[in-house]
Length: 518
Image (cartoon, rainbow, N blue to C red; front, side, top):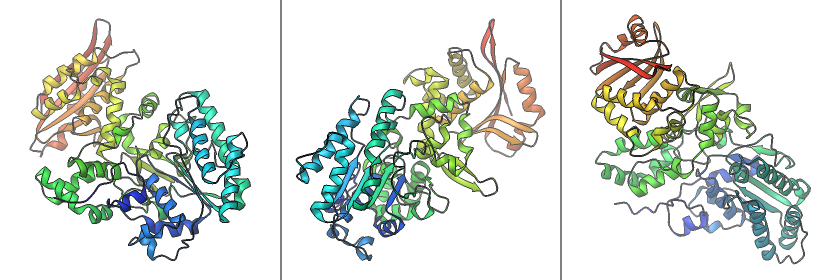
């Protein structure tokens, strides 16, 4: 049994070090960051280690070298002279309240004003911030370090409330906009967030702000490489493997499927999600942890409303400019899905200068598809109903394809709205099958054309052809004429061919189907 202590949810570097929790050393990034520039911006998904890294920076700038004993920074040629540090954590507030942002900034400023014995201040938040920077410099005789954590949360939380969004935007621009005039008093500024809103330009006045979000040399600054995971948590992985009654390599492979795969620059490493890993090691269970900490329902709605098919999310393309310049006024969900961690870089084509993106791992894919499914089939959102996807899972696993189709047939009769088409029903079936844990391929490019859907389990293969307001016969003829089943001729699993037609005719609305064995 491992005696490792896992810092689940902990974001304080001093607490982690002093209380003996496991810590993955990222302090070797401090020196290159100081050489990189005076003002740095980093975008990474939530719960990915940004706050902990800011806490690490804070301890360094405060000159607390004893905390770094045995870490990379301790052996580097660094200036450990303490500087005054002003950290603004914008993560801990309910910004749906009208004055949530005002109250938070006022509270943070008041704490620092008390620390520096400031008795007379101006009335505006921006003015008080400027006075605070100048006062900290005057009291200590040293330039000030500014650390801003989750700068965009006051916007992300209320992006669907236009008036409050605009109010918070103006306040943030005003508050941080005067940093340029304070440049002579500032030693270093480091700003983190989930998304980089180029059109917002909250920090546009900050001199030479360097965005390192997609820089190769900082690709691994948050998140854990495979080597970091194994080197720091081998005993914990061994405990998890013992609990699962399997060997170390098998457990590590399963952890990779669920938690690995994040890539922020093409020359970087594939990264594990720290939050999910720590929870899995603590609970001794591989489960979906990170996705459950927030529900990006607006992203799912954007995908659905933009006509993006679910299977297309594993093959989306975008330019670098699109990926780093996102905003809520841009209704294309793909850039924001990358910034927030729901899509990750997969490859890059230098000729077209396009990045290809996909889901980083099973945890994220399952979570996002679970949000999408009720937008196609609302009945599946009810746990314990006959249409709960777990019931479909049992049907596919046991080869009960007729029960699967009957359940699907009943469910699709009650789909709301009228703007249905073949894609609607195919997407619904795709999402159901994916959430059942099966291997699903949509639009496989065969030698005679594209098959609609192929679902594979350990014992069965289900090959679907969908039609809309046509006929089952036409669907089955297409399966046979284009020999969709041909590529499974040597497969030992039992093959079912399913021809399905979705009718919107008043006298016969719903799904009709035919099943044959291949």
